[in-house]
Image 1: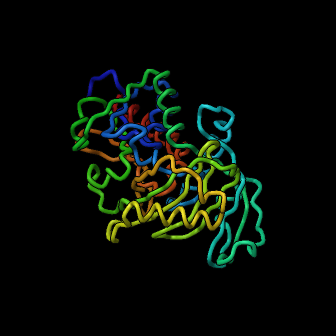
Image 2: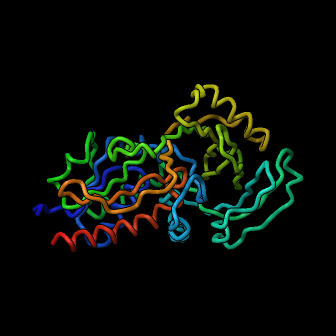
Image 3: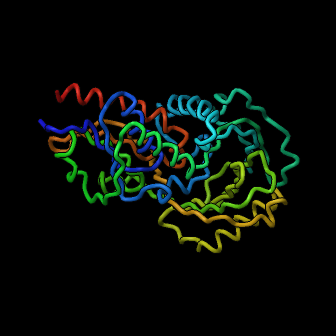
Length: 321
């Protein structure tokens, strides 16, 4: 038996790691977070980010997404959380139907796509858009208030943590390819451009599979423009080229963006996997709860997954003690 004053160590300080740690702390457990990168330098902080189905696979994903949307609706009332409910339009170049998740929004509406040349399908709905650097700071503040220590530490192997807590929660994102020895996880590069907001208050999102997508996500004073969707076996698009193409595509959709000043260029890797890995596994005499492989939907399922993680950790502690 491991004797420690920490119930669980969470590996990773992206949105899934921070949310998992917060859910554990709110259950009364003693938690510590370790990560080689902390906000604002995580891939999560590079994200758009908007609640919706994007590169997410798992039989329970719809349940997690619905729970997460409900959580974001509550967070939207807290200005410091960086969450806003925004209505907008999603389009497809093919004849397509809205993803079943979008029924959870409560105001999904098919619309006339004739005003969008090149697109054959379109629908409108209201969803949560999340300013990830601001939201990550909100989560960190909540963790500090709960006396959770967040430590920057390079982790080469999960074995390093075996004597520090009875349960390790692996939320290492793309790093799980090495830490969990999981070749099924593919780090998919994304580049976004953040510009000053010229007055945009609706989102635009293009359904597609890359390597380049168009989306416009307003965050009060800024707008996030996207994006690339680049698998590691493709030739990488140079960042300067990606920025130029993203700005040109978005300006064709919304001309007010043409001269919007660039505030930042962000780049990160989406941890893409055919199926999210959310399960308990053994690592020698150490119990590990894996929570990774969320693709482009880490934000979208973060709260639902984190609540399941908390229940799994509680069950592990019951088995141990």
